[in-house]
Length: 63
Image (cartoon, rainbow, N blue to C red; front, top):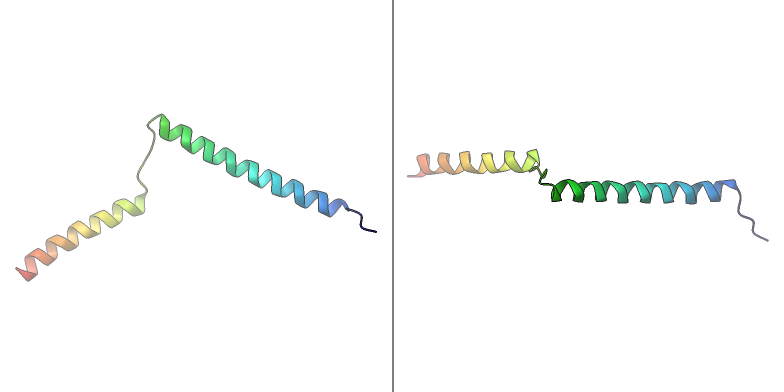
């Protein structure tokens, strides 16, 4: 005979709340992007800068 104890219920409740929190964060991000509040992540900007500087240095030293 299997009975579901309080730990089973709390695990399901915890999982449900995690899923709901995740969905809410995604909805909020989509809403921000639709309003035009999208920002480029810092690591993307840093990578672009490094590529530009590296390209210039390659052009100077290899030309």
